[in-house]
Amino acid sequence: LSTRAASVLDKLDIDYNGEVAGVYDGQWKGSGDIMTSVCPSTGEVLARIRTASPENVQEAIAKSREAYKTLRNVPAPRRGEILRQIREALASKREALGDLVSLEMGKIKTEGSGEVQEFVDICDYAVGLSRMLNGRIVPSERPGHTIYEVPNPLGVVGVLSAFNFPVAVYGWNFSLSFAAGNATIWKPSPSTPLCSIAVTRIIAKVLEANSIDGAAASLVTGGKDVGVAVVDSPKIELISFTGSESVGRVVGQAVAGRFGKTILELGGNNACIIMDDADLDMAIPAVFFGAVGTAGQRCTSTRRLYLQRGIADKVIERLVKLYASVKPNDPLIHSTLVGPLHTQAAVQTYNDTIDHLRSIGAEIFTGANIVAQETGGNFVAPTLARPKTVNTQDKIWATEAFVPILNVGVFDELDEAIKWNNEVPQGLSSSLWTRDLRNVGKWIGPNGSDAGIVNVNVGTSGAEIGAAFGGNKSTGWGRESGGDAWKQYVRWSACTVNYSDAAPLAQGVNFAA
Ligand code: NAD
Image 1 (cartoon, rainbow, N blue to C red):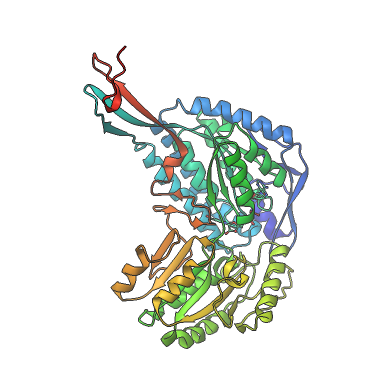
Image 2: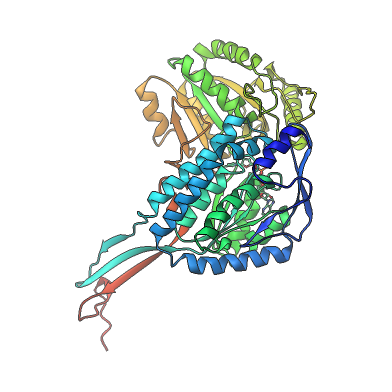
């Protein structure tokens, strides 16, 4: 192993010479296949992980159910206190974990640490939530009766996560779910097992120190089969799935088939619209970050850029200059803005998308090549292109290519750009740049963007934890993190309680014999 990789893994006590146990259900184990973690910047094997066998998965689910039965009786504020300790433990490892995210996923260091910070932030939120899991009291039409809506713990929550946020997505789910009194079982992406193992070790230590069964935060690493076993289990009430539309479709149908609950956070295909009156000094850096940041591998990455005719040429010219300033490089080097793509398969997607752009006669302003590195690695040049037309039926506009390619279209009226924004199957994030209040009103109202995230003078990429995060249409309608998202992690009991000496029926129904 390179000294640099070894030093990152050493800081988190990950054994890169032997086999790393990839299953936790109160005890560390793993008797399934060996899986390797590969560094996308160099191609080197970081560690060998013993994944979950089918028996390991079933055992972890059973143990999580047992852990839930205990956890549901721990008072919510006490669960909050444990979350506070988890928050502290994560914060103390922020830099080491951030390094690991960069090493294993490939995003740059500041974004790797930022992702850990997101977990810390949502822990803070969940600590507060643990004292505000409020139900409601509803007036009854019957004298001496009261109706309560009571949020009770739900059960076991299965969290299936994508490679691109190997820490934060689990954090959003685990924190709210734990505050609500549930056990979670995590099936991370098969290409980021070390991040999940490092996070689970931190959580497990805190749980054990508080005499809470570790299976309240179980981990089962592995591939598709492990995911299927979790999704199909009738012992798991809620499946929170983050990943591609194609897998999300299968998962959604499988869980619906057994009447389970789902939260689906699927692909985005996010547009940014810049009006003639926009402040370009603000808009252009936001587009640059949205399209190029994380090498285009965020669900909220900017993939479509709609420019009003008056500023179109100027914006393209300035973006081309910015694109020329980035050199894809090792994500752990401080000055790097763009790291590698996560896998070789993503490089293939990049090549295929460029080929398609050429086949439809698109103008390619910059990019469209693989960037050679001494170290190897999956480096590609961020690309800016303008297809001849905005034909939203064409896959260049209608599908999410999870690579740093930004497609430009030019419009005259805002209505046209909103139509293009909405015409694609996905509906995650969207952004309008304007100084005209009338445009803002249209954009955020009933005739505006149909995405879950509808920003104004803020880019598509990156969100705070306070608002509910998620998208509509083929993005899956899921909401996580802030807002009312916590309400999905409980089972609501509608309780009509009669304190009187009579038992009248509702709606005045008379059923006297
Ligand atoms: P993916 O769909 O390939 O994998 C996601 C998870 O599903 C992995 O853990 C995988 O092992 C598992 N899986 C695969 N087949 C399965 C099956 N049949 N049953 C159960 N589980 C199965 O996604 P990815 O490539 O890791 O992630 C990239 C995608 O995730 C992009 O589309 C991106 O937009 C999306 N994403 C969405 C959000 C959001 O909040 N909307 C956030 C991050 C990523």
